[in-house]
Image 1 (cartoon, helix red, strand yellow):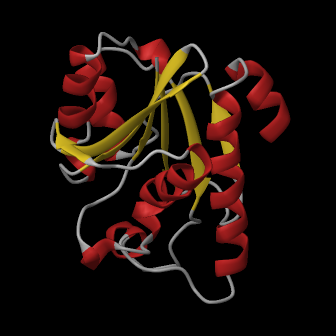
Image 2 (cartoon, helix red, strand yellow; image 1 turned 30 degrees about the vertical axis):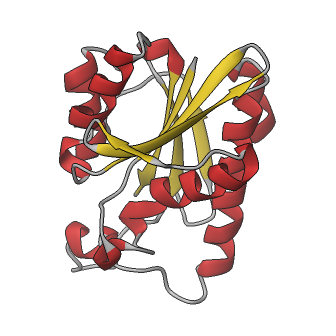
Length: 185
């Protein structure tokens, strides 16, 4: 089993914001993997499909970013998954818009959604795709930046990054993650 989690905040108020790039990647994965998020349980919306000899899950936690672990871990426990079975997609201030980075483990880097996951999982050893959203302008609060929308001149680069991240997720359903990292980093 494999679980791909996109971090974000629920509701139309947050659609298209920098903090919701994880949700945006899951939306693209639904099309690529032909998985509908048709189930509302575990404080999130999720769906699954059989692919070859494995089952692939997509999840959008509806707990708000800072409580993401409250959705991910119950779903994992119910389906008897381990941290090795998950891939988390989320926004990263330290990467420019349009950039992605794949890693097999790591700290939270100040990201509250990742802090929640690490706390609830009890480990930081899980796969992740960081999608660049850039740093706030001088004097702008980080919260305002991540809850804001991309500038029109960033949109093309961001769409490219979202597509690359979704392609990396799809590749992980077929290949070992280290091969996916070599291909997409």
